[in-house]
Length: 175
Image 1: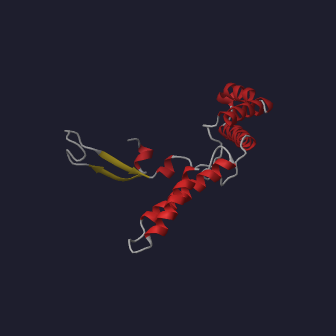
Image 2: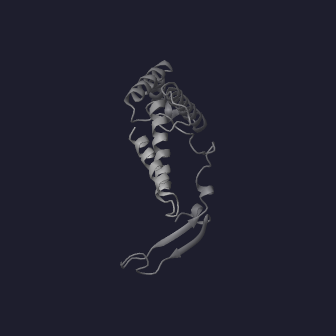
Image 3: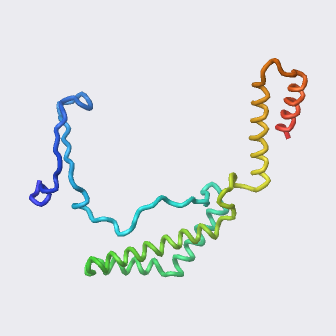
């Protein structure tokens, strides 16, 4: 291990033979202060927002791809990336980092904007196809719950009334 890294080592360990698997090798671990080795990211990583664009819907996917392609050419990103590839070896680290972050931001804006333009379902949609189908799915789910509940009613209850309700719910489910 090189000298500068040696000062960052916090713990070192050697696992016994056959600790993880039958082998004549021993595992070695090194615990290092990674914050000192790696740069800290300039941006905070957060969880992605809810995505509504579904790849299983070909019409939306096609519209999304066309929109991304149009925005990409409108902003001239292909030329910017080619220029960056050519100029990167002679750029200073700060300028290169700034340029890469700027291009990344533009790409993120293009993708998010294209997604927003190509979807029409609201954020709380429980279905992919139509509002009518969504209502039918909810009705079916509720009907199955009621049938399940009726089948678990105690035997002391009015059998004729429960049978009547059960038949009604089964007919509703068929609809």
